[in-house]
Length: 212
Ligand SMILES: [Zn+2]
Ligand SMILES: [Zn+2]
Image 1 (spheres, helix red, strand yellow):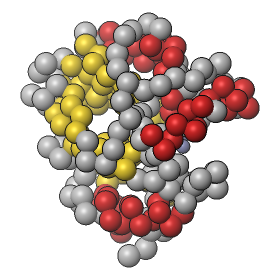
Image 2 (cartoon, rainbow, N blue to C red):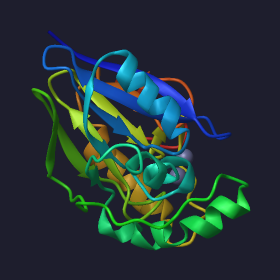
Image 3 (cartoon, rainbow, N blue to C red):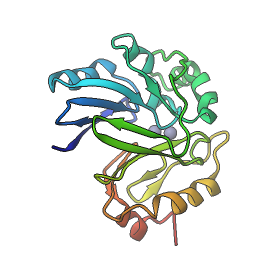
Image 4 (cartoon, helix red, strand yellow):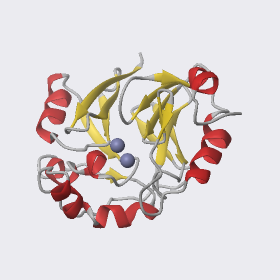
């Protein structure tokens, strides 16, 4: 038995929506449904999985723009991000228009997330870590059993998230990466919001933006 995952890049920004599932219970979660909801649900259905929730890292349109469309097709709870990203979700229609994404209505998550919350996919528990900086309400999801980190736009392979948006904070981002991510096991696999996977060990050694 295992926790399995499939990365499904969506939107013109190739945002790494990720399908996570417990291959014993067949329960599944989708992270950051930025768009292409029919394609995401097709991935769930072709594996015969039961989708139990959607988890969101932060309120940017490429990460949450498909929420309302997906909820129109399947009734699952939307969990996250942290409440401090509500102002981004309120701006979704404008952001979708600005980037020429399909219309993206405002929504309210079933639950806002906080640091220390625990979520599960089947028998696998993920800890919620609040990492403000790219956005004030950004959260990431860490499964100690794997170990595996869903990092959103906090940490990329040899890069970090932009902090030139309203209410971004570069110092918060660097401090939280050091305090909360660098102490994860070095072999933790990281699925970033965009681009290739990496590991905590690789980023501690090679990330030019977060020096020891
Ligand atoms: Zn973002
Ligand atoms: Zn992004």
